[in-house]
Image 1 (cartoon, rainbow, N blue to C red):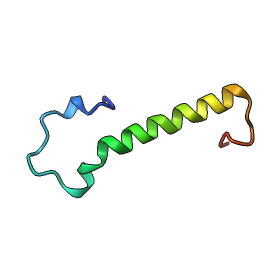
Image 2: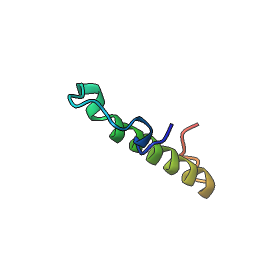
Image 3: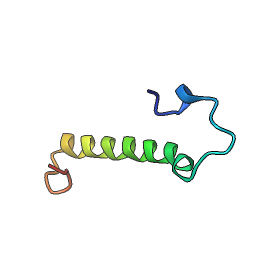
Length: 50
């Protein structure tokens, strides 16, 4: 699946409460994963989750 949400386009005309924030959750997960990778790369063991 694509994180952009384009793979499930068109969406329902009346999305539920869970669907309103799906794209935001996907982007937050991607950003958290990137920050984790950068912290590990820089050797910041205090900030990187194990």
